[in-house]
Each structure stands twice: as structure tokens, then as C-alpha cells.
Length: 259
Image 1 (cartoon, one colour):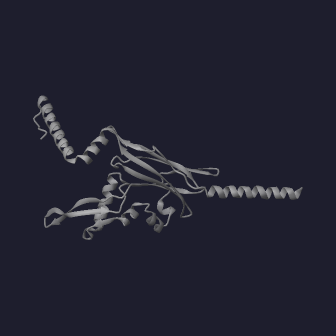
Image 2 (cartoon, helix red, strand yellow):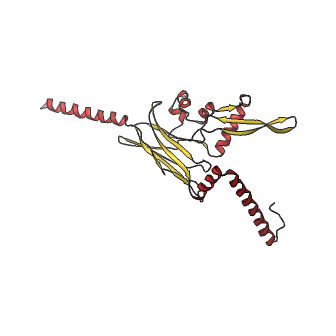
Image 3 (tube, rainbow, N blue to C red):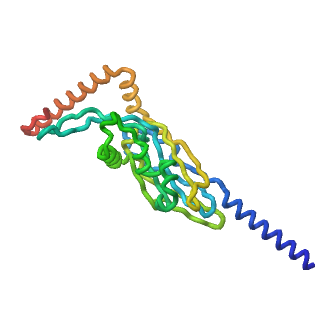
């Protein structure tokens, strides 16, 4: 009887150990709500929520990344006492949108080499940036570009913003954020990296399409297919708006012209 009892205890312990091991190896999951963002005539931004399940004892880094895009800027240079256009600068190799949210500071979760390899923070994004022509590749150019993107809400890192809850053998995470209004229509990738013991133990990704609908979609299609006609319409619309403001101002007794 004692032998049977010992065997039963061993089997129960083995079963519990197997269950704990299975929970620790559970692959992460991800769900994004809404499943698409539609930009209409009255679009005022959107609230996005990312949630899912993690392996037991894991922390998480959630990254929203847009497609790479080349951007062109006119750089300014000083010629004696005068500031003037010093030529065009082309910046590429960086995502059009980069948002990173983590349950703890990223530097505490992963080694610097892994952060750079996975491109999980602003420093890693700057390291992969390409500036052309090479003569214009200076530290202040890179810093000003990142500052511009941060001001637009297109480059953002929020550490400690992801909520992680452990309930028994289940670990869940969730984060919500406001979608940047300046983010253009594109297909964005949302990835959750599960981290434990300074290593990424799993990841899950989902696509988030952002599209235009209604009047904005028709205007974008007109600008793409009939650019000249679209330009003429814009000029006419601006002219009519200016004349309308003048008429309103004159009837209200104003003396300031809109032109």
C-alpha cells in the first residue's frame, strides 16, 4: 500500500512539473483591436489596444513598425552671416513609424547587442539610418531627424507602459495607445517579443492596415491618377476660400484682407 502511495505521489509530482514546463514554453499570442484603421472625412485618430498571452514568468516588448521610406529634406548652412540652403539630404533605412512599449526598461530586459539586432529602441533606429550624400551625414542631422519624428508622434518609446498579469500558470499582457494622426495609410506590423532571463523566448506578430475611405480615399485616388487636374482643383478651392473670407470680413466691417 505504501509503495502504491509513493508511486502515485511521484506521478502527481511529475505531472505538475510537466504542466509547469508546458506553461513556461507556451508561445506568445497577440491580438490587435481594431483590426484595421479607416481614415474618413471626420477621422480624429484611433485608440489601439494590443493584448495576448506570454510564457510563464516572461516580460514583453511590443513594437509597431511601418514600412521603410526614404525622405528628402533641404539642409541649411551658414555662409558668413547668412543662412541659406546647403543642399538636399536623403534619409532612408528607418521605418516610417516606430512605436515601442515595454513592461520594463528595454535595457534591463535585453543586452545592447540584441536590442540593436532587433531594432527595439531609438538608438538602434539611429544606428541603421542612412544619410546621403555621405558628406551630409553628421550627428546633428541624425539627431534633428529623430527629434522631428518624435515631435510628430512617429517615433515613440514608452517603457513600463505594458501591463503584465500573472494568474496561476497564465501570464497575460495588454497596452493601449493613441494612433498617431500623421501616420500615413500603409500596412503596419505589430510584434510582441516575450523576454525572460535577458533572452527573447518567443514572438508573435499581427498586421494592422491603415486605409483611407470615403472622400479622402477619392481625393487620394484623384491626386494619384490625375495629378494636374487635382492641382488645378486645389488652386481653385484655395481661391474661392480666400474670396469667401474677404466677403465675410467686409460684411462684418473688417479691414484685413485674407490675401
